[in-house]
Image 1 (cartoon, rainbow, N blue to C red):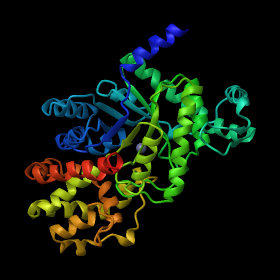
Image 2 (cartoon, rainbow, N blue to C red):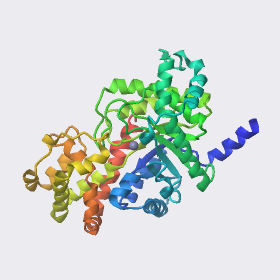
Image 3 (cartoon, rainbow, N blue to C red):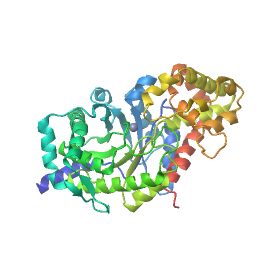
Image 4 (cartoon, rainbow, N blue to C red):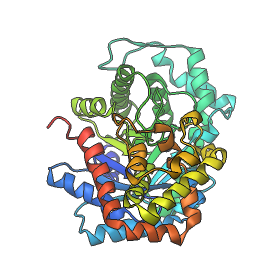
Length: 431
Ligand SMILES: [Zn+2]
């Protein structure tokens, strides 16, 4: 048995996700270089953050891009900038229906179980799960957490009904990937972040138990935390409560690693993780305190910098982003629908087409760049632009041309955003 564990560990290390990883989405595959430059700057600070280029099935569908495009961009960028360490290409938010599209190009798979949550499992599975949890009944003590959690048969039954089938399906997705890519040649994340309700730390504990029982070598998990993680804007909620929950989640993960034979580097992944400035200091502090890793996933924050860069460039580029905004105003329902759980737009706070017409570059940039203290910053407009990349995709070559003609200013925005607003606040804030 010992030998087996040893062999497993050696193989597993082949694709062992580094402590700090950061997901970068690049809607139009034009900013890879500017994104990677932020990681190179961090590297010079002595901070090792591994880039993960992520793109979801949803984004590919909306834009009309292909998983191979992401692989090509990542490989070329890494080569051109002589990036010295590892990097990944993440098939983000995939499921059993679309996983096969991503096999060749990805080495990181985020299996989203949201759609299968609540599929009632058969009684045999439920009873087996509840039987296996007997030792945790009544009071469950997690090392490091003062108050024990109350566990009863009803709470276990609720967890079983909600998660057993969904995680079983994730195991099927995992075995499809393993069958086609070979064991230990990829990283697995499971995401449950795009649901209505947050998962409590105790729920996370039992979710991890089920994942362990299904033999999924999970390296990162994205629960839904309490509070709002809206796309591209700051966290909305009780920071103290978040901090308590995040701290408990870290301790739950540590305990689950021991109890359920999960990979020792298993860590939390924060989706819609860009721009959550008010909780970054808490996250930074707690992962250091517990010596844990983290994966932060961002996507649209780079696209928003592209829009800001175009606006700052003035002339035709400013006209183009005004047009993108105007179209998105008239198609707001269509654009926001795929993101209903992760955006929150107050339409009364959106500037009208007439208002926008008179805006200067500066005014447009001030409204959408993420400086929460700026009097002209508009979080509702920023969220709408976040989901309006579909319109840019419809502009096609014309849009890409504008991006390329203003590559310098846009690139500067993209790098600064990742390095100053994200890395500095998350990882280097105490220096
Ligand atoms: Zn997500």
